[in-house]
Image (cartoon, rainbow, N blue to C red; front, side, top):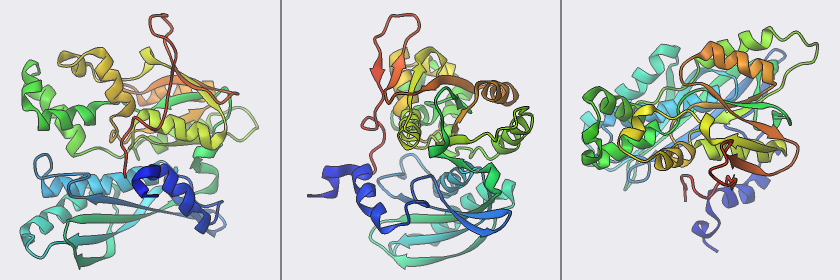
Length: 334
């Protein structure tokens, strides 16, 4: 058996037996360190030729995207970042200027969140590999876990999906964007090259949760959508042992996409394109509706969880049949 035969999820299931079961399985690990704080730790790796290439991504953008991926995982746990380490594998003939620009991109992404680079490692490698470990802090009652979702929750997407995939396609195939204005084209490319980790959502979420008039504590289920909207919804549902019904007309898609691709292709990019780095959150309806209202443009309730295990894409207009959402159509790491 080869790793390519069982793919990422199959390999993870085999490796998780070496880890404490109550720690692994989310976007990051949570380690209790004191009574009112927990340490959040996550690692994300970018490999030349797999996650980036010089055709589409400058050294500074590689650095930004590597940092953003980790900050997004921290945000997906309800935590705020406190520092990162950087492990870098590089061929010996890599220009020093490329490495400096890589770190410049990392620093630019970290700067708004006052997050320092606190260490790392460098080694020779036949291919450029950037691995970042991020550390964050979260108060236990603010934790977001994939397993926290409950039936009859609404599913909130904090922003549009499909923009990063569109930006990548425009970089690879510039002729696709002939019907776009320069501003529209640049906006989609920027979504791919410099995604924004949604740490800005956490204070808004806390405000919405604090307005809860019920005496029952609200558990927030969720993760980020780095591997696609469908991937996030499926993984949350599987971890929480619930199903979902996702309404295709409610999925937030940039309006510019249908200027150069079909609405069906735009929907596929939104569901499976990946690297949009939005948060997908499962909440009681009133809190979810309030959160979407406070976030504003781009945020949407895309569906609702159910008490069975079917995860379906539905069409309220009755034009399209129900479609089972799966993990198989999204980005495959192996």
